Length: 152
Length: 175
Image (cartoon, rainbow over all chains, first blue to last red):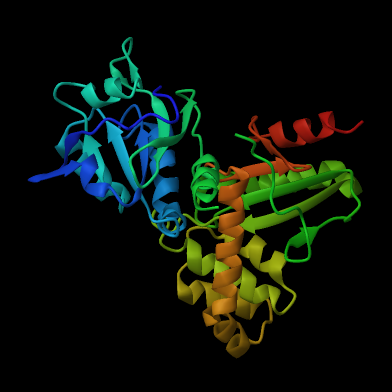
């Protein structure tokens, strides 16, 4: 996990059919990066469903949530449509897990992203991070506290 | 992460059992969630087993994107509370989880003898939506990561609540 105080590495990933997203484009907003192992898996599904309901709370702090996994863009699209997600899912698909590796949030053994959270400030500096055990949904309380601290 | 209940149980809450009970159980739940449907008899069983040792509080945590009727059902319970029938409505909702459309909600209100005009007005009252939202936000802050989420004496319970799990856990916490 990249340390707090580090400049978050920039990346450009597919955010849907014919859509890419550059982290740099979000400068001026806070950014929440939610790396997770896999679309459709039970814990990830619960975690993303929860964040989908807490977007309003993130918005209050001018924060954009991004979900990232090694799943392909079409898998993301199906998952997102099925769960009615209102935030981008980025495909860290080719080279597989390259962005997760940059953030030191890649599990070499299983070949998927770890369940890792980062909160970046408006300048793209990592201000908070949290690594959750794979089988535990970390909830949104840590993210919310981090955002509140940044706005305090 | 801490997973401490915030705010503590207070006047804003719907409470069952003695306020001074040694065990204070809070559930964050969604009326359309099937796991919460399974938790309903588990809580019932725990209340029967523990009697006046247990106070139970229910707070709303509707996952509206996944459960299209969850919000309306939560509002129905809150509107029933305005006529002192929160728990009766709560029970009706969990006993008829697959009948949560508007027509059925009004039907439950009628069966409970509520003033229907007041009930439907209260359901649309922004104060009710505010109560549901503040329950939800308190859940997020407390570390709720799905439904049902239980807190005992302010601490999140991550063990097995299914079957007799909840009752056994609560009994083990009695000193």
